[in-house]
Amino acid sequence: MYIRTHQDALRNLAEILDLPERRDRILQSTVRIMLCLEVEPRLFLADCQALLIEGGLETLRARRRDALDEAEDLVAVVDPEEDRLFEEIATALDALRFTDTVRRAFPDLRADRWQIARAILLYESGVREQLSAVIKGHDDEARRKSAHNALEAMIGALRPAWGDRVGALRGACLETLKEVGDLDFDRIHQEAETLFELFAASDERAAKLLSAIDADQVRAADQIRRVREHLAAARALGDGPSPDGPDSLREVA
Image 1: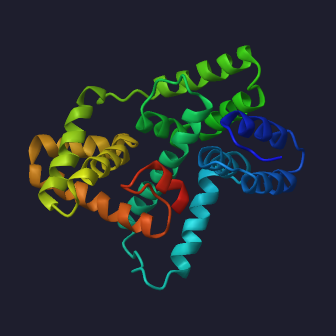
Image 2: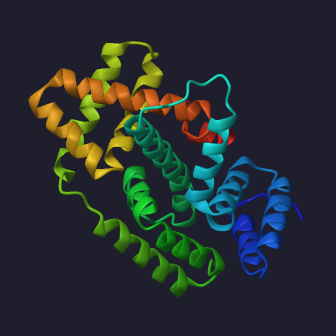
Image 3: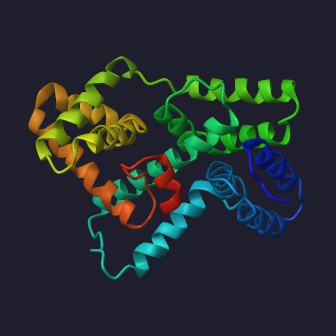
């Protein structure tokens, strides 16, 4: 049976998640991804497999560490602070990857990608629980509404204290990229948005950048460039969104 639509994907995922053995869930999800005839349901199935069946962020983190160990053409990170920042950025990219999956499962959810990513990073098990619930209950309006409300509450609980300064973060990322000048006009805004999302996903990174914006624009630009360097390194390992758009994200990941 071929899978052509999002509803087809939901029905198949509900069946897969009801299987008692993890090995069978992985096998069946892999088979049904191959049976997808359209890009969108195939990406949705693949990301649900990664998030709900294969272990989510922790599994992606382990694969990334293995890839780093095996990569001969990448310079090893020997500074513990830089290593920590790289891992944080790469994990935030993983969370951003999964936001499109959450949005497809919850089409009425009113939240930006960075807000959903924060919930995935801090409440991953809760997000996975509600995503699983909405998939299994895709034909049950009450169950869908309950899962939606629970997820919305998680996101709302993480509303940052600096929320009224989102524009300052976005503006700083965009201006820094304009100064660097290594991107075409049609790519610079999406790259700036990705950088903003990486800062917004962490209260620590956001607060540090806002402090620098207020005190020293040069220091702020240095922070943005530093995060961008780690973004490039994570992309080199196939773990992050491309400035070409969200479809490129999952094709690479």
